[in-house]
Length: 344
Length: 202
Image 1: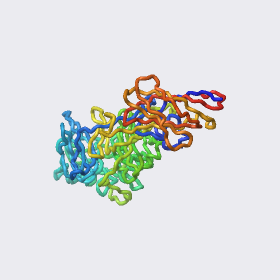
Image 2 (image 1 turned 30 degrees about the vertical axis):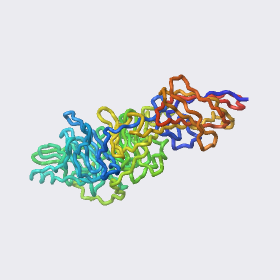
Image 3 (image 1 turned 90 degrees about the vertical axis):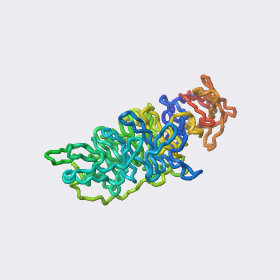
Image 4 (image 1 turned 30 degrees about the horizontal axis):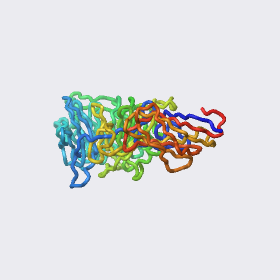
């Protein structure tokens, strides 16, 4: 004796679950799927593809038949005149997308470095660093090393000599000034640009004292800087610290009192593994920590949202955590990670 | 309140875990997509509405950096030396995209009962001239068996008949595209016979 039964499945909104045994998965989940995206109504569909923006590599191979060097960095800089500059870095050169070719903006960088960019809206400049060659500025067409500000004798005495921190890896624009972090020899420092005696906050005036330290007893270096809301967030792999303005700078009778900032530790256990893993979703930050992906409102404790794919995320090659990159786009957060050879 | 290093004479001396950028970078071989626009009802009540939104793994391309331009187009820096716009076309350049989805084992909550599937109804979006393959795996089998290949044409419910009609206690299904062709699966239904089943399954 058998009975007829019609089993209908129309909700696939659980997505991938690599944490639980197959036998206990929810019926909307899958233990094995690939190149499938989940639709808003719980449907599934094969993902879309990608097309090169130009049928030429950004930088040609070093020898015929060799692979072109990987593109490590891309950025769209929109200047205040509305001009758009699509930039890409590969090999040792920063290039700009023209109609049918990649035109060199600047060459001679250390190969395969990862550029981090920040726009200075007041100066209408694109500023960038790569952790190896210094601190650069660009108008989208050409680029050059930032010349340190040349202070007057009075400024030298009152504020200090001008010196650009060596080879910063991270850059941010916050509170009308430029912040450079993870510099040579001082990977836990965040340098901030200062004012001249006329009260102009400069992008190229740093001094030997104008820095803060992302204190953490674990001795971790700074992995990310992100201006968010009223604060600048400083990440190490397992900590988050917020920098908040305390007192503005003052200039009175030729005397300079520097701005003061307070540092507020947000988390001693959660941080971000890379600058490029951070983006904004629904008004909150989302980023990858050492044990998963977290959502963070900038104030309260971050909340992990990757429990169901925890084993997959923990398989990231630790040595290459710096390379993890992500983006939030159209209701989705894309997180690209390097795994051990043979996986996926 | 912390202040600048002007009054701080303690120099850096205790960074243990110093790692620089690697001169040679590796491929980011796996992209996990967190669909924050999908909120499963089963997971309501979290701090953020999308706390339990689904994850999905994507492979076949190797982004070193992602970027959204001011027109809201999505780009990535490719490890192969090219810059790509993502979300356009059905292939990665010239490379077809292999896509599949496996359903967790179906035992109707009565794993002790033997069952047969008589046919499968599919609710697919129509892409005439393209096909979708359906595989099945019963009980503790490790190999997938091809059940059939259906054309994704205009039809309310294309159904696939199971000709060998195996007897099983649990069955798993796998949907896979053919030659990188696109597919959208809205739902499927299994018409099953459950042996020695006295009560109606809900």
